[in-house]
Image (cartoon, one colour):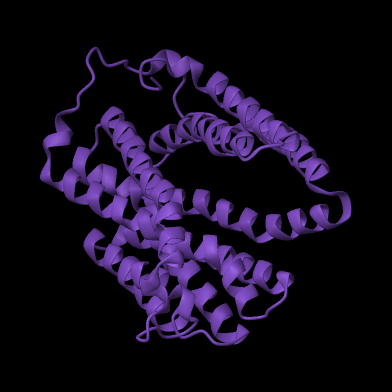
Length: 317
């Protein structure tokens, strides 16, 4: 769609901002769990996707040799927001309650994002973009695509598990709510340099080596640091290591796409959308899988190490 209607990219981003703001506003008036699922789970996800994809298409227009680095800088903004937002939300909740917090977030989101949209533009004017007559999906049969897509999906299955459970983990260690928030914020903070570093490395070194560093390094951090965490110091060290190594994985997507589609900008855009979708499916499944592991008898066996209720999630991640 973005390839066929390049003149609608700005309008799509505005519509995405509108959906995200409405979802936050709707959540303020939620009285049932399904209300939150509809607003925060469905509507917000659709809005954020619509807002985000044109940015990725613009990135493909602006950057070539340093595309990974550029994508890393973009994703580092996500980590930076994750440093600040937990403390903002905690403060708003404590002072004003849930309803006022959601309303504040909705207004802030609409104002902040809308103010920068006029500056988000492509390198080429829409009238000069060659619109493909047919959509080429031949890359779906490419073995490289299948391997990269599967690896990306599997990484998504475990990537967000620490972020989901670290606040609860900290609470079960008898740490304060603020300590749990600090751990999550520190993990997001380390994702800022991690995204930039991994994006930069993907432009200069073999993709397989960079993937191995990110995936194996983050797995070892989970197994050793999270699995054996018995105090706040080890938990903070884990947050730093995991955020840096796993948080930057998304910076590899442009390299994934160019490895399969080479210099075809339209196929690159479609590949990016598929890699993001595959990661999203993994993220959606991560919550019920990790919840099931937390409740399972396996998590409380005599072989457990660290905080016993979480060994299943540690080994799974």
